Length: 122
Image (cartoon, rainbow, N blue to C red; front, side, top):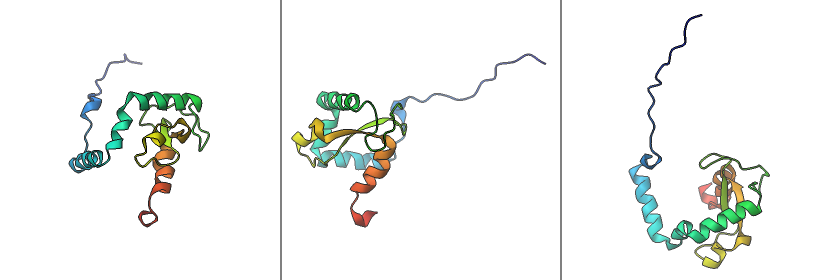
């Protein structure tokens, strides 16, 4: 048997801040943020505290499927703090711990979003 030699992979790392977002998507996101001032609430320390509090309360377990959530965003088994009742800009409902529960990203992005879509879009 011969000696092992190190082979360069040729791969380079990409900083997370350089992720490509299509131009149309970026403009759509900016327009949505301007038209819904409540979207800024997701960037507040109050929301960050609340979501961690909810994750701990729910033992990092998806409340819809019972799956233990050990992943890191954007993995399918990462935790998402979701509003049970859509808040529609109601600040009290947005920050109400009884209205927020833990879901897996997979469940939230698939089942929950499908259920919230208007019938004609399904």
